[in-house]
Length: 163
Image (cartoon, rainbow, N blue to C red; front, side):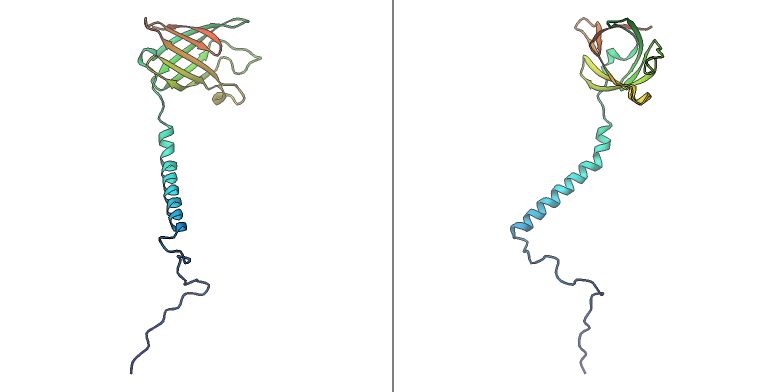
């Protein structure tokens, strides 16, 4: 007596048809699907490496690294600040306090925005210390003679290295 081969049945609700949906591997839509799959795989790879790449920042040129005193004159008064510049950023603290301006006199982080061999642009991150305080930009430059100059917003910044 010969037995009939066992026929395997798919579980209830399972579609046992081929997943190709009738498209051969040479069909134009199949090629489009492969391109889409490759693009999605590439995008996923970029997303997975993006946080590590975002953490890489420009380095401050060595002549600018150190402890500095900065002064600048506005329309109303003369200000002074202490800058501690590190290879990756630093801190800024204006030597003033003002009851009308809660942002003044706070030590704030300096984030490197751009850096070249002779110039660095920092963002003074007041908003990181007190919510609602505006961030300010400071630029430091090393001249051909080695003198360091700068700007704070639209004001000229006089810089003196502290011993």
